[in-house]
Image (cartoon, rainbow, N blue to C red; front, side, top):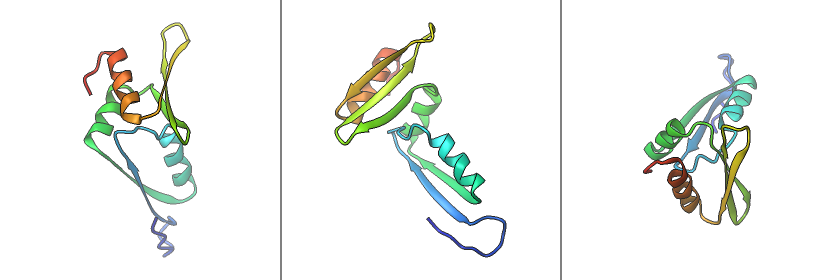
Length: 103
């Protein structure tokens, strides 16, 4: 985080890194909150992270404990499929299997 309070209309620059772990469930909300607080936000992502988000924008993924990751996949009937795995890579692989992807 870089805060150069020079009076140019923003507090500074917040660099946010998003990887193939789209964890960052809530990244859009976080970016919006930071911008509302006066930060200029720059988001970096790996190519895999970008492709995953583009392919599955509605899948929510987050860390539910220090040892587990969870994905919530919305269903057409207003329900959802919930998957939990210890390793993020295993979780992403399973999401892709269920949704027909090859990430």
